[in-house]
Figure: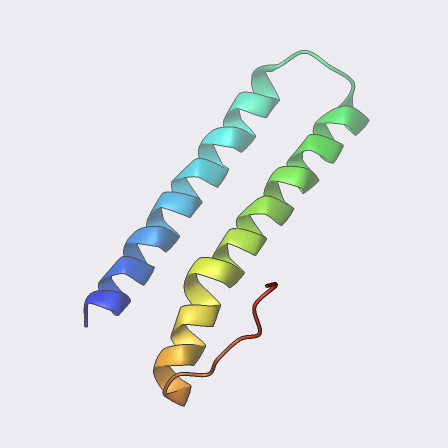
Length: 72
């Protein structure tokens, strides 16, 4: 149950961070294409965080301990 709560908290925090970053980018005077590039980079970072902190733990909960290969 605590994993589900931590997943919900993680999604809320990532959503607020994404919203705040987009609002701050809109305030910075720069070329529109550069704003779009920065926005895409931030979006990719948030999606990767969701994959590693939400989707993979959810899959391990459902599947009962899938062992992911390590880089060692």
